[in-house]
Image (tube, rainbow, N blue to C red; front, side, top):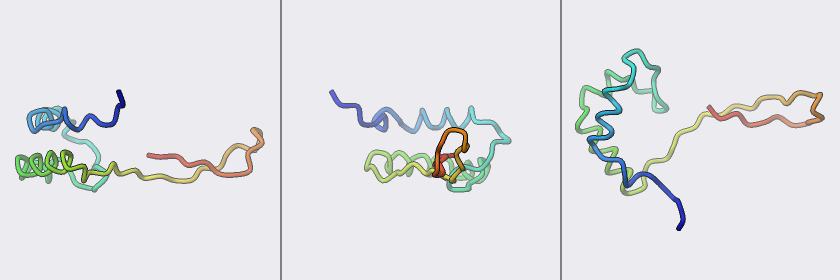
Length: 83
């Protein structure tokens, strides 16, 4: 058996519950949308997201930056730090 994705377990009800549990003062997401802005058309946004998940059109956004490695460890290159 090969583990590939959990997308088939996510449905509108699960995502709605996750939205409702999210902190009201949370930071913007990867797409820079605020919670309140996303919630104005919650059902349409959730249905669109589930459709994109099912068709594998959702890519996880990841911001990354390069951090210098400490010289004491003998490293000569920077390291990637995903946020």
